[in-house]
Image (cartoon, rainbow, N blue to C red; front, side, top):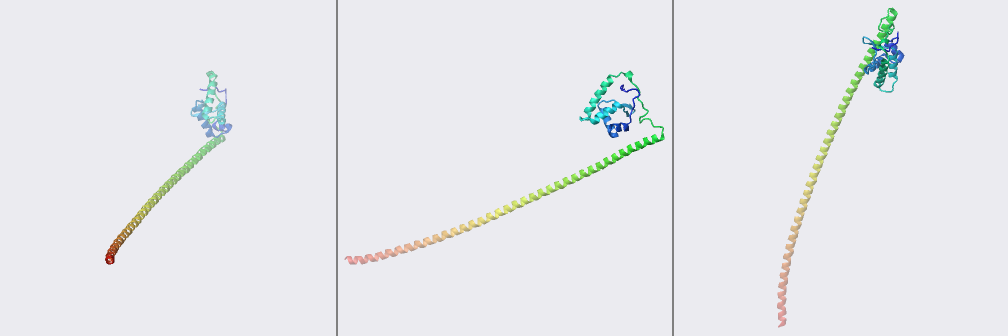
Amino acid sequence: MRSDIQPNERSFTTKEVAEKVGIATPTVRKYGQILERNGYEFLKDRDRRIFVQSDIDALIAVRDTDKPLDDTAKELVAEQKERLAGTSPTDITDIALADTYDALPDNPEQLKETLLFLAKEVAAAREMNVQLAEGMTQLKTTVSRLQQDHHVISSAIGNSAQKTHAKIEKLTEQQKSNYETLLEQEKEKSERLEFELQSLREEQEKEWRSQNDFNKRLEAALQKREGGLSKIFSIFKK
């Protein structure tokens, strides 16, 4: 139980705190949750927080901090504990709840104003829910488009890879065919050259035999002629 409340200290509604601090009512609740999470103690009526001036100062400190919110909250909790440690439990006093949001006003105009305020809060919450739903729809649409783009890109890459592979296979087959054609052409040239060489050898051998026969006949004729001349010379020697 907090013991730092001044006698008849006034309490404030969430709306009043939001106006005094200059933040939205959901932000007041958010900062309150951060403070409580780190050990800050609020006065409460059931589940509702009751704000006093020291709580407003704490919310302003959270709003204006340059540090992480939890770090600032821990510092404020430490300050509150020091303040509570220096206050005697006998000093506990009641706070003025006459102006809080917990008691419904008897004045119909005030009641109307309160209900109007609550209606606006509900409308704002509904509008926020609608915006969140629209944001989720847009996010789903974006994710779906990204998935489609990924599928298209993957398909394009796959098709390109298949085309490239087909081109490589075609070029390889063409090179193989060209190589076989050139090999066959070279083989035919080699066979023709071998045939021509064999023909030249046969012609040369034929020519050689013909020349050899001619030489033999010439030699025989010469020998025969030499024999006749020898007989003629022998007559003159006698």
